[in-house]
Image (cartoon, rainbow, N blue to C red; front, side, top):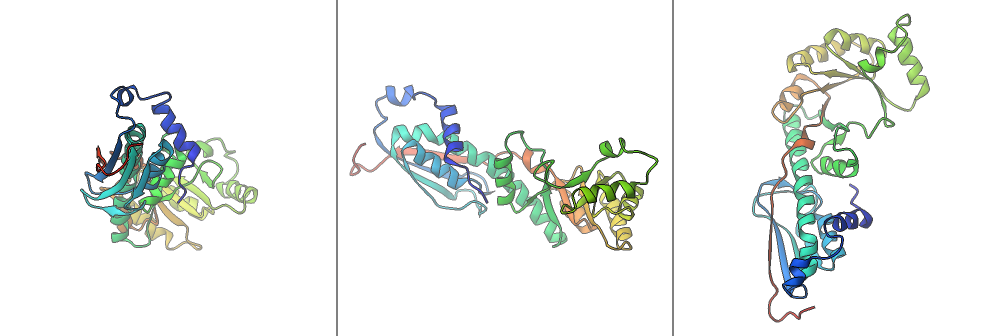
Length: 288
């Protein structure tokens, strides 16, 4: 699971504090030896605690993570301890806190869906779309993977997925199977997925050579009927349920026979609250 580079973290810090911190410096406390703790106010799946620690280090403090990315913790758990000059801590803590809150929110929502789906069907995987905040792919992937989900696809270059918006532009004189065969010949190392709008299309696309049939906005009952129909097709394509799949219905879609749950829901989950407390270091510790 990739972490953020120092360049990325430094850019976040400089965006928040490009010049100086006149409050801390003006109060004359920038050099005071201080400590900080970051604790979970909510139950959460932790994400980016290592990156938060590195932010403090780049700002001039010392940090010790007490948990790891992907770990599920209860409210009140100690996530990170920091010590160093008060100026360094104040310069870094808000961005470190916010990064953890946002990404832990995504990771927690992803884990909720994964656990619900796999309790109903251990073979079902939760795959998150590329419908995250533009420019935030690295962050989004780190968070969903911390929650146990996988990327649906990393981008347009990743694998073959034929939508209705593609099919409407094809030559209608040729059968779909011919178009799909051409596509497979163009990119033979990639799996071929086709999105269907209902039971009839799903069966037709499977018979035309789709290796993954992705069904948009179908009910769990329709997914069950499609899964049963696909069992009679060899080789059997994978069945992906997409559109409106979220934590409240993930178990129903998994139980219906979906192999993959395609969702963007975790990206819109609320942040998980992280409490920051800053206090003086013991008097025996020297000021910096």
